Image 1 (cartoon, rainbow, N blue to C red):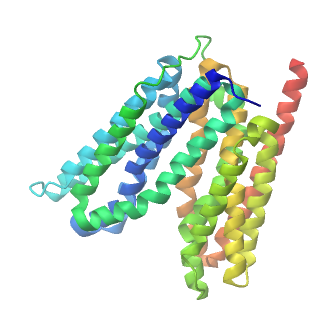
Image 2 (tube, one colour):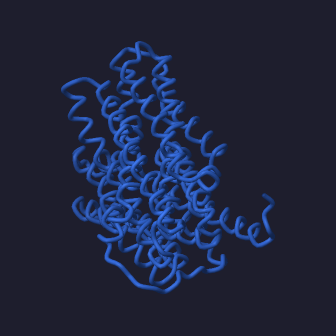
Image 3 (cartoon, rainbow, N blue to C red):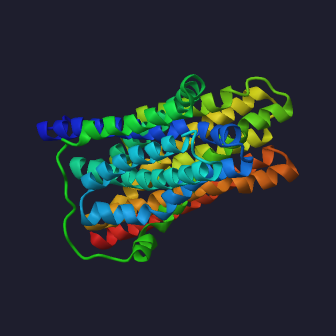
Amino acid sequence: MTETPGEDVALRHLVRLTAALFLSYLAVAMALPAIPVYVTHRLHLGNALGGLAVGIAFLSTILTRNHAGNLADQVSSKICMLRGLKLYSLASLICLVSAWAALPQPASYALLIVGRLLLGLGESQVLVGMISWGVGLMGTHRSGKVIALVGAGMYGAFAAGGPVGLLLLRYSGFAGLMLACTVVPLLGWWMVHGVPEVRSPTGKRESFWRILARIWRPGAAVGLQGVGFAGLGAFISLYFSSRGWPLAGFGLTCFGVGFVLVRLVCGHLPDRIGGTPVAIVSLMVEACGQYLLWIAPGPSLALVGALLTGLGCSMVFPSMGSEVVKRVPPQLRGTALGGFAAFQDLAYGATGPIAGLFADHYGYSVVFLIGGLAAVLGLGMAIAAHREGRVRANSQG
């Protein structure tokens, strides 16, 4: 179908939002591998405190999703995203100050924690604000495309940001890295501050828990999908090394190729055929990939499993996100999307420690058995969400 001029303008605005999201997530991705190095080597603290400095940002993100959703719904999604971009910059600036040589060690670490907490709040506001703003610009019938572009911006930043962050840390130190992380979100703010605002319609509010009751099945599906993604990201290199297999570094590459390929080729499908059918097929593919990793006798089949996992994981978030948008009125969209994203945040945060405990006792292959079982459970949730949607459509018809 040919886009109208209005749709064409909206799409250009959406591309600008996606570029700003990419820049903002560079501030997260570039710092991610550098934080534990800074804590252990520069501040001379233990690995546990290094892990805390990394993880506390994700905890902050989970706890502030509801706040970000309310801000997008009750004030505006544009203000929500712009505030988040400023918070990214402020958080990185505080982390930069923590590297001041005159500060005592406890003060430096405390400032780092404050910066990481603010970063989590900024991430909540940027993501929820951008999705709500993008859906407002494009319309709910294009929500799948909006959320697919959100994922492309996020994961593209994570793919590029890690190596860049380590290079900056090596050649300009932690302060130089944090200076770069302070600047890139401001570039994103400059790119989007002129994009038109889309205010949510006013209407009856509902409690966060009542909204979660509407969307918990799509949320559970995307959270269970995230178990496989998080387990693969954390343990596939260790899995290959424990088996004495070569090509360990290609596991994440195969996953990333599959993930990006499906986003590029199939990003329109949730809007065309519906979110739940796409999610059902995606979770089946992810489960196959995880089980293949679990039983793989050699590196070749394990890499195929990683590729299948990427192919399967790619469209679950945008597919289920488009379903969430349909389940709530426009004035609750931001809050609903914030709650929905929190399911995935929780899966990413919890999978590493829990799967690691099992891996300590049963070997690294069990991580992928857990991911396969989670994908099957997610498939059940997606099927249930599909049935709910059909019942709702029949009752409205």
